[in-house]
Figure 1: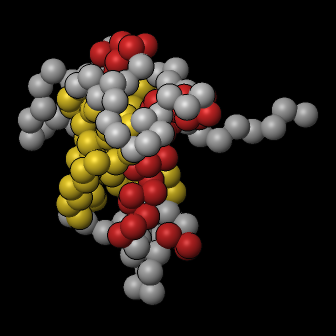
Figure 2 (figure 1 turned 90 degrees about the vertical axis):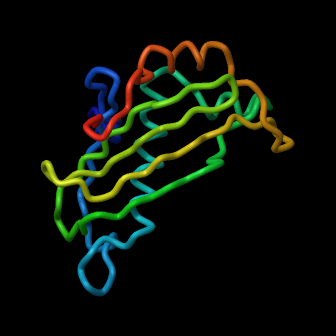
Length: 154
């Protein structure tokens, strides 16, 4: 018997698409998605985007090279998601530097923008100090980095 694998999303051009469903556990007493759950969904989408790029965060951490840490986060909540909604997380790399990258993530229900995050992740050594990302990771990011970001950029 072949066991099902967790969803990992897929790339559409330079954008990573990751679908989630709103479950009862995601909501507060009013039936609206609790604000912190967007952070969880965005984290899962980023992790799977990296995995699909061939970036093995676990191996780097276990080898003592370092890990990504969120160094800045800006969230805007625009519309509520509710129980049983299908939500699509669209992620793209908007900026790349030797030690960090900025990822823009947006949660949609159909065409309605629910929440937007601008996340800076920095690669840090085991002692917590910033360091350069592995060269092959930068090369992987360069294949999908957005050249232009405007109000209509997904």
